[in-house]
Image (tube, rainbow over all chains, first blue to last red; front, side, top):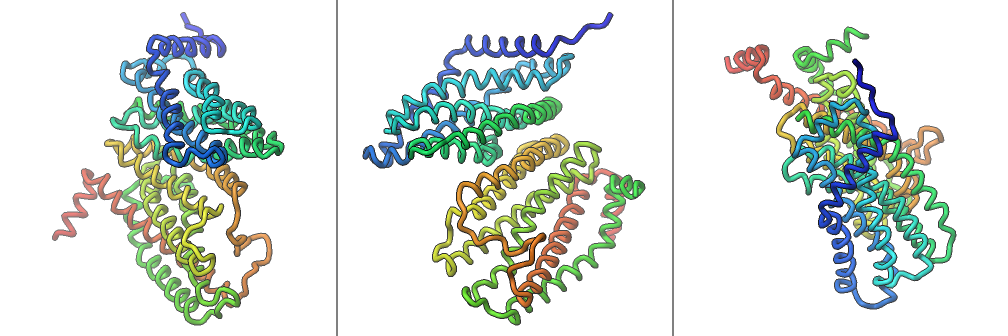
Length: 230
Length: 247
């Protein structure tokens, strides 16, 4: 008797549901990146100046850099618990292709970190005196940008999951790869604040996302396999 | 061709054959570097606008070119090691990282020293400087990841994946940074167009670039050979080699 591999959609949704459910059972993990985002953003006015004019200029950059760091810190946990309890190895020997499973896991990760960050971003924009003309661009750019960041971060998470104290190493290998998203994310918000058209920058961010969704799972699957073999 | 390829898979064969190449490459590298240095620093005419400070180009441009080409070589070796599981490719990939990082560092330092007399500051956040800095970071990431694994095989595989990911990203990073800001003078050497540089200045530069490439090959071979000895330290041929050296 041959067992049939489940279809793409059922495998995808099963993995997605499982990860969301696991996260729901441990809600504090889900809150941590958001709290980090909030706290670090509120440090900047204390460190630089409470002057609204200065803050307004710096706001897009601050928001994006802090979002980058929040994504980075949260991606460390992407495969950690699955690696520790052995479910990662079960995923590897299951008949479903690793590509689909890591894709689902990364999407779940984005829904739990990038998406809430996106929702929180306008609020922090207000705190940092970001002009309201930049809000729409901020939200759209951050939705696409953080999704790309999740995919890039997952590659690093897969590579470092087998290493004890992989956290600092993860930032070393992943942050340089985050730079294009940072550049275009900030550029779209700045263009919107200055009253220019920002569709071009958003299109570039969308192109990054399309590339990341299609190519990154290959690298994530390979890196997870290497870590599990180690 | 294929027998050569198969032989390359044998670290022992590589160790022996590269030992024969080594002196020739060394002579070639140091010869070219000596000629290029003396010609570039002493005989090439001073620049009309930048005076003598432009002579840093004879170190800066070759180092930058090799830092970039070195990453491509590393990624190429990474692809070979992942696809054909060739041990030698793993060794070359591992050894290319620190040398490439060194070249990127030389490029950054020489660029900073050149920037002071030319732009009046050691560092500007210009596109090409920033790209080189990011390339340096990418090299550091590969080195750090390799060091973090205890097992050579997993370390090589992980670094191979990382350098391939980096290769896909390099054009994107370059293009993004280019778009972000540009102040650097446009590239002096262009393959497709006539160079904007006078031939009296260009010839020593080309010699220096060739010399740097030979020097890079020399360093890579030496580093790979010692890495091979470390990895194969429990095999018979390495033990015999050591026994012969010790007499």
